[in-house]
Amino acid sequence: MATIKIGVVGAGLIGLSTAVCISESIPKCSVAVIADRFTPDTTSDVAAGMLIPHAYPGIPISRQKQWFRETFNYLLAISNSSEAADAGIRLISGWQIFRSLPTEETPFWADIVLGFHKMTQAELTKFPQHVFGQGFTTLKCDSLFYLPWLMKRLKGNGGQVHIKRIENLWELCDTYDIVVNCSGIGSRELMSDLTVFPIRGQVLKVQAPWISHFIRDGNGLTYIYPGMHDVTLGGTRQKDDWRLHPDPENSKDILARCCVLEPSLCRVWGIKERVGLRPGRPELRLQREILSQDGQQLPVVHNYGHSGGGFSVHWGTAIEAAQLVRDCIAELNGPSSKAKL
Ligand SMILES: Cc1cc2nc3c(=O)[nH]c(=O)nc-3n(C[C@H](O)[C@H](O)[C@H](O)COP(=O)(O)OP(=O)(O)OC[C@H]3O[C@@H](n4cnc5c(N)ncnc54)[C@H](O)[C@@H]3O)c2cc1C
Ligand SMILES: *[C@@H]1O[C@H](CO)[C@@H](O)[C@H](O)[C@H]1NC(C)=O
Ligand SMILES: CC(=O)N[C@H]1CO[C@H](CO)[C@@H](O)[C@@H]1O
Image (cartoon, rainbow, N blue to C red; front, top):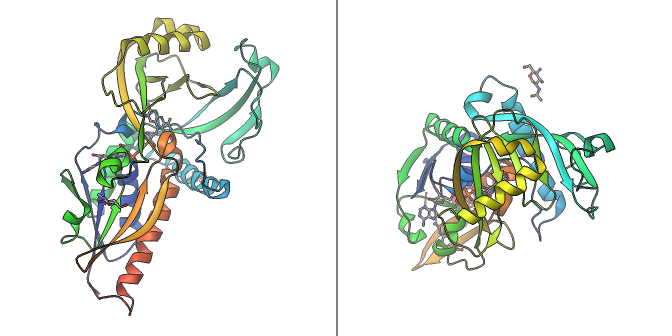
C-alpha cells in the first residue's frame, strides 16, 4: 500500500494538534501543514489557553464532555512529565465567581477538573460583589511554548510545513489524498462558510509575577490568568468585529475591571495589548465530506469553529478528526472506490 498523503490546512492550535495526532496514530501516512500564518501570529497565540470549557450549542453534552476529558487527561500527563516546561503546560488553581446564582451550580465538567468545590464563605470574602463561586484546579497551555512544541513534535514525526495561502481546496488535490480543514476564522472565505463569524477578543499581557491564582468572572468577560512569563488580563467579546488593532478604550476598561477583582494589579508593568478573532460558528464543525468536481473526488475532514474554547477541547477534537481521516483511508482503499491509491 502506498503512503497516504494528508494535507492539513491551518497552523493554529487546531491544525497543529490535528496534524500531530494524525502523524502519531495513523501508520503509513505523510502529513503536511499548509498555512499562511504560523506561531506567534495566529489567533491561538493570543489566547490565554485556560482549560475551562465553553459550551457548544447543538452538540450533545456527552460529546463535549468526552472532548474535554480527553484533552484534560492528555495535558495532565504532559504537565506531570519532564516535558512540562518546554510544552508550557501546568496546573493552576483559582476561582470562577458569579454576581448572581448561575443556572447550573455544578457545570458538566466539574468532575474532570481537580478538586472542584463550591466556594466557601471565607473564600468569597475576597469578592464582596459576588454571591457565588466555584473553586478548582485546572490546566493552562501557554501558547507561545505549546504551539512551537507541537510544531517540533510534528517535524520529529516527519511532518512537513508549507507557508502558503490557499484560495481553493482543489489546489491541494494533486498533491494530497486527503485534506483536513482547520482554518479557523479563515474558513469563512476558504469554505465560503458564511456562518463563521469573528468574536473579537482583546487582552493585556502584563508583568505581575506575584499573581498565582486565576480569577474568572462567571460571565467570561473579565479574567486574570497567570502564565509562565506574564499574566493575561481580559477581555472583550465583540461579535462581528474584525478590527485587529488594539483599542485603547478596551484596554483601560479591561484593566479597571481586573483591578476591581484583584486590586494589586494597579501596580502592573510591561503592558502589551493583543487582539485575536475567535472563530465563532453556531456549531463546531467536525465532519467528513467528499468534494466532487469534474469527475475528481477529494475527501475532506473539517475541524473548525472552536469559538472561545479551542484549548479546552483541542486534543479530543483532534482524536475525532484523526478517526475521520482513518475512515476516509478505509474508503479510498475500499473495493467500491475509484482506486486513487
Ligand atoms: C483573546 C482570546 C482568548 C482566548 N482564551 C481561550 C482560553 O483561555 N481557553 C480556550 O480554550 N480558548 C480560548 N480562546 C479560543 C481559542 O484561541 C480558539 O478556539 C483557537 O485558538 C482556535 O484555533 P484555530 O486553530 O481554529 O484558529 P487559528 O489559531 O486562527 O488558526 C487558523 C490557521 O488557519 C490558517 N488559515 C486560515 N485560512 C487560510 C487560508 N486560506 N490559507 C492558508 N491558511 C489559512 C491560518 O494561517 C492559521 O494558521 C481564546 C481566544 C481569544 C481570541
Ligand atoms: C505522574 O507521574 C508519576 C511518576 O511518573 C506517575 O506514577 C503517575 O501515574 C503520573 N500521574 C499522572 C496523572 O499522569
Ligand atoms: C482549505 C479547505 O479545506 N477549504 C475547503 C473546506 O471545505 C469547503 C466545503 O465545505 C470547501 O469549499 C473549501 O474549499
